[in-house]
Amino acid sequence: MISREVAWRTFAAEYNASSLEVKGEGERVPSYVITPLGAMINRLFVVGVLTDIENTGTEEEPFWKARITDPTGTFYISAGQYQPEAAIALARIKPPEFIAVVGKSRTYSPEEGALYVSIRPEKVTVVDEKIRDYWILETCKSTLKRISAAEEARRMENPTVESLMKLGFSRLLSEGVVRSVAHYQSVDFEKYRAVVIDALRYLLPEYQMEIPETPVELPEEIDEEGNIDNIDNEEKVLAIIDRLDKKGKGAPWDEIVEEARKEGIEKDELEEITNSLLDKGMIYEPILGKMKRI
Image (cartoon, rainbow, N blue to C red; front, side, top):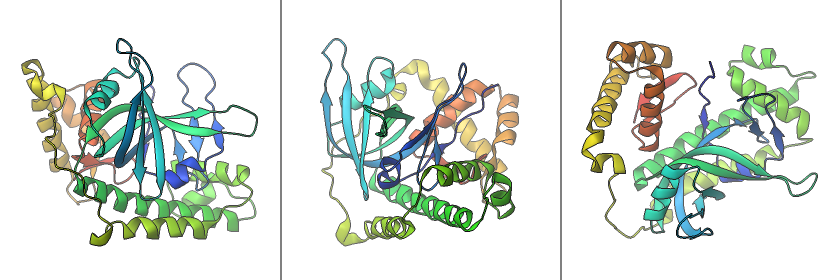
């Protein structure tokens, strides 16, 4: 069974600086973009301001290209007929607007040694400023953890996944860091610490961006009576997460799967529901393998 890929939180400055792609071999083996700090990205979760959007396709077959800015740079996203849900959402949003995007990493290499990264969105959701600010805080924490892991690895004569895990880092991060150390000759950690500081400054009142107040369209599934069951199941999953989050550090994914099955929600459907809740900013993954209410 193919495991569910983690949606990484990373600032544009780190993601766009990536120059290493590890391509999966064989059917349905995922590929990853490895950032200079060791994020091993197949999926990512970003929140920022949609600044511009353009249909480069036709009215019959639209292909949307858009830019999302965070405090450190710009993410580039594109969606067409193979991402219908994201394409429909983008068609309805008028910039500027705070949006959350969950999507797959994509690369373009026009020549040897050059790698450009973008995002192929799975879901796009309008969010408010509080969600944007929370994403900044969580991404700062994740970035600082990657800085710590990468610095530890570069102090080692022969960094390995096991040696980093002994220091308390997750296997996934350790694998990414080991790959990054082997590829990136040097990393300016002070630059990434400055990125974190700059991002935190954006949370100060004088840096807040004013977004014109516009009515937020309800997600399509809420408009359709046939999808009321989906909403009910989302409520069930939220209740399960609340019930299992006994220590305030998140509900274990395996236990969520088991409890959801008891309520008639199989794993595939559960993953769809949790992806939807992640997109809506109602839950997040504090650490790998756990879900927590926002």
